[in-house]
Image: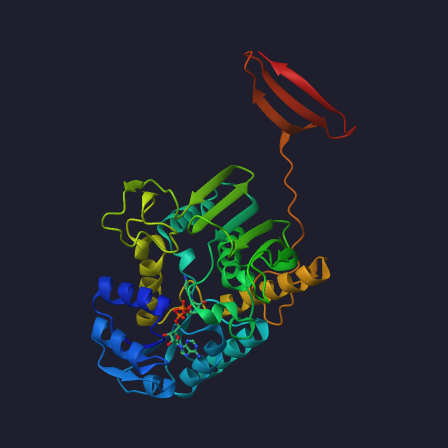
Length: 396
Ligand SMILES: NC(=O)c1ccc[n+]([C@@H]2O[C@H](COP(=O)([O-])OP(=O)(O)OC[C@H]3O[C@@H](n4cnc5c(N)ncnc54)[C@H](O)[C@@H]3O)[C@@H](O)[C@H]2O)c1
């Protein structure tokens, strides 16, 4: 693929490392950045032929097959509209929009233009997520009851993130977008998110947006998702997920302290991992960040889908759903009430009732619980279907 990269900052460089470092047949052929010197530096580092500070000029080139948006949140919509105008496939970083209205306009525009669109939600492409999700899909956890995702770190690396106008929000939007898509994927992307309850506050930073939040998302089938996000967490990048089902549990720790621990006096202090706060003493490096953060599997899916004429796992539609859930989170943080997820576009199941799964013990009883005790007795707790009486029975 010949790629136009819009943005030469933090994520543009992570993407470029992944794009050109692994598949090797993909090439960034055009780079747009706000400042000439950073565009030029990027072009030198990644041997990019065309360098510009004009966004449209970067997109509108015959050799460009796909445009990769790595720009601040307030510029995503403008970039997407230019891709539609010039009929170029587009893949965009997260969050798709600053809110659901922006995301919906982008979704409608790409679909009207008939161009390939991919939503770059890397955290549903991490090796651990892929494996865990496969187990969930195969039924290893039974019916999913609760899924939690946590992303916290000491705060973003560029000024615009901290400006509510450019960023569109604080940690709910910046980090919550990952958590929503992770938990939504475990619960089932065809299950409708219906309402959100969220606490948010600005506990530490001198900003207008929230720097810490916790939210609950109710799904139509009765499952519940939970997100924990913060820009005030100390100690690095904490990425953890938990999934609980009727038949099992998964705990995933994706980044900090995942089996690689190193002590250094700091003699040759070096980069440790994204958002690491120290490079001396005991440190927790990450072996291959491009892979651990999902970038490689993500681009493989995107470009394979483009080549095969299919849809990638994550599209602008998913980005729009995520934005709609987060809009409800902001509304709830303000109203302190459960707030509905307003979805003008919904392509999943509708009219589901809450799942009821009662386990029969025999014709007259439900099984409540079965347990082997430390004193050697096996106990059954049963409920009489007619009388409703609950009683226990010891089995020899
Ligand atoms: N894991 C992830 O998926 C992930 C991680 C980090 C950032 N992001 C997303 O990537 C996008 C860019 O974030 P980043 O961390 O690369 O930011 P950054 O500040 O490091 O880079 C932004 C780039 O946009 C360019 N730019 C153009 N116009 C600009 C303007 N008016 N103000 C500021 N920059 C301008 C800059 O030149 C720079 O190259 C954001 O949407 C962010 O949410 C995603």
